[in-house]
Every structure is written in structure tokens, then in C-alpha cells.
Image (tube, rainbow, N blue to C red):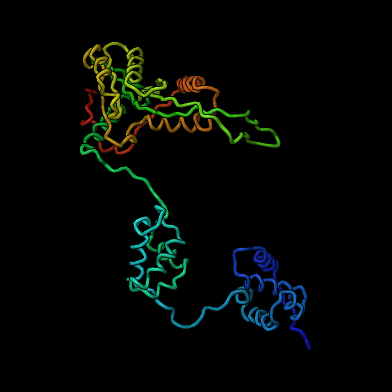
Length: 389
């Protein structure tokens, strides 16, 4: 009996078919068909191919026949079946979405978020009772497709912060006015305009960064070498405690002022105020942008402020849950990436020393941060050209 004639494959087709035979995520019949084409291109007979793949010889003949009709893709994949597919009604889709938007724990599950597996099982188990018998046989890919089409990602959490401050817009506006006034203290060349007929106003963006962990390694790091280009570190570590940082950054000069301590109290804030008092000339105004933390308004702080001339310190408070309005958060983000990420120390004192050292290094070449968000909504007239506080 004469064998079916051999076939010819291009180099690209051979590479494609070989890649299919190595994949573990496609149907076994597709892998077998790819091998049939490769074996036939090598001159193997139909019966030999059938024996090697443990399939019926008619299966081999059908694959080769489809190849000659339409090429590699025609041979590898089945034609779409004729007939009208069973439809999933809009009501059924709406029911699926409504289930996906509910908390699994409210429906008897332990988890907070759906997994595709659990959502699929729930739909199949409860579809009949909900009046959607078609969904008892729905597949997981179809459930996923419906969710994707509706842009429902019930497995994902995105955090937001609700505006709980009833005076949010007013307080934000006050902060933006301050930022506008700061920008007006620079000339066209970016130099600071020194006032000669009114007190100089120094604006300090201030906030706390509590809970900075002092972590020690249990063995020395392995430094990079030619063979190993990165730092190798033992997984084990030792916690030594935490430190708190309260800092301010001068929005005119970029100078950053730190106070590191083991506490998070009014006395630490007062320590920062004293440092600011020493930095600036008597008669100048020290304007501080900060949040509504109790340490900023405590009795101890008020007693300290009472010892200073009226108008020496001016406070501008950001709205609740709006730390992003405070420019120093940009500085803290930069500090975390540059210095705190992956830091290891032998003691809390070493951590404090290195934080102070970082501020010294930053202040050698200070960077002035400029606020831009919604600043164009504040006119120079509203910001007061005379820079009144």
C-alpha cells in the first residue's frame, strides 16, 4: 500500500511546530498534530507516525489532509462547530456581575475577595435556584470573559481616602494660597526675593515619619563581585526597635531640619520649633504647614509658643487625611528610596546617626520642592503680593 506523500514545511513553520511540542499549556491533540506534521516532513510513513503517537492511522491521514487544504493552522486546530451557540441572556450576565460585586463572606465563604474558582463554583451551584439554568454549565473562561467585558475586578483592592473633613476644600485652598505665596518669593531667575519693607516669611513643610525600624542582620552581607553582581543577604534578621522622625523642609532653600527620637510626643515637636527659632533671624515669620496631630496643638506646644513674640510662628493646617497636600511627603518618599530601603544597622543609635548623616548630605546640595497641583487656580492677587501671612 502506498504511503501518503511527504510534506514540505518552511523553517518558520518547523520552529513554530517545535515550540508547540514543548508547551505544557495547550491541548494534547494540538501537540500530537504538530508532531504528525514534523514527522511527515521528515519522511515518516503514516503508519509509523500512528504507531509512534499511539493514535489511529485515520487520525494521521485527516491531519495531513487538512494541512494540504489549508496549511499548518488548518491542520492543528478544529473548525468552529456549526449551529447556534447557547446564549447567556443579559439578565443572567447581570446576575453574575451582581454576585461578583458582593463580599464572599456575606455568601458563606471565609475569604474577603472572590477567586475565579470560588465564584465559578458559586454561580454553577446557585444558578438553578436563581432561575438561570443555562449557567449551571458555564465555564470559568466564560465567567472571566463576562467580568472583563464589564471591567469587574472582584479580586483586586484599590485604596482610597474619603474626604471626612467637612472643611476640606477651604483648608486645601488655604494651603494652596501658601504655596502660591512661596512661588511669588522667587524671581524670574529662581532667586529668592528678600523683602526689605516687611518681615521675611520662611515657610516650613513639616510632618512626622514614625515607626522607622532598626533592623540588624544575623550575618554579614556578601558584597558584589565580578561573578556575583548584587548584594547577598541572609534572610534572617533581628528587630532592634523603632525610631520616629519629625522633620521640616524650608520651601525657599530646600534645607531639611530633622529631629530623631524614640518617642512621638509634643516635646519632639518643640525641639524642632527650637531648631527653627535658632535658624532664622528675630522678627522673621516662621510659617509651618503641618497636619492636625495632637502634638502640634498640645498644651506644652502652646506654652512654648507663648514665650515667643506674637506672629513669630504661623501654622497652616492641612485637612484631615490629606497628607499628600504636604510637600514634605515628597521628601520622605525620596528618603525612603534613597536611604531607608534595605537599611541594616547594629543599634538604634546607629540608625539615628545615619538619618542625621543623610540630612547633612542632603543639605550640602539642597533641592527646592515646588508645588504645582491646582496652583494655577490661585491668582497672585488672591495670594497677596505683599506676602501678608
